[in-house]
Picture 1 (cartoon, rainbow, N blue to C red):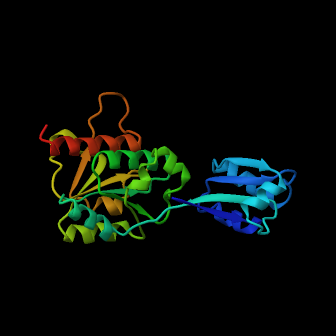
Picture 2: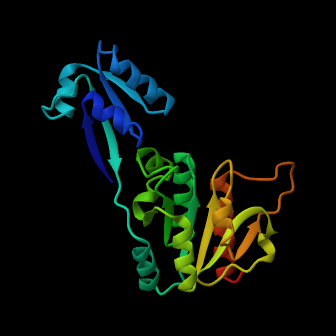
Picture 3: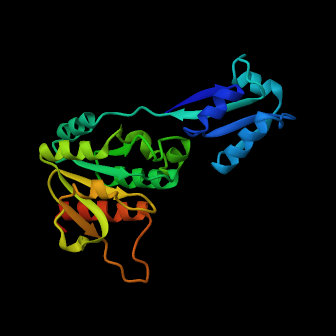
Length: 243
């Protein structure tokens, strides 16, 4: 992953919408639009550092930073075709994790870590209303995201239908689905995990071949998205090893 440097009040404010890793403010510069930038950054949980002008001049490499410089980690996304090619290269049935609206970077990072450890060939995330890969995701994944193929798509439902035509079976995590422990997880597979609050959208859920649930012994009827993903991936790996 490479770092992208953004400087100037308007460019930084616009970039806040896409996510930043950290923000540098020139000491003594907290009025006007910079106050707004600081407020938005705090709401988004972005670390903010005060530094002297010389440090910001150095970060901006001589550019007109107007008292504000931001750092964003850039990530190279792949296509779903790249993920399928990787599975073919490994002579394995494709295992692709579809994340339907995961908004928390911590969850995305934790899912990526489990996906890499448990044999997934890649992740697919939506272009809108979902977390993107950034420094917070990198940290939460303990660096795993940098070794995992991630595709970003505009229409998840279209991609699912296209892959079903190519032989993949789709399993959606849903609390009213069949028990995970009574479901065979094998062959070319798309595993779909829904958002933290809403689960899998109805439109996407309608395209699932199977809905599966994790049996719960306690009072709660659902798990954190990253925990659920880890359990489902582990069960797939366990079944694949004949245990």
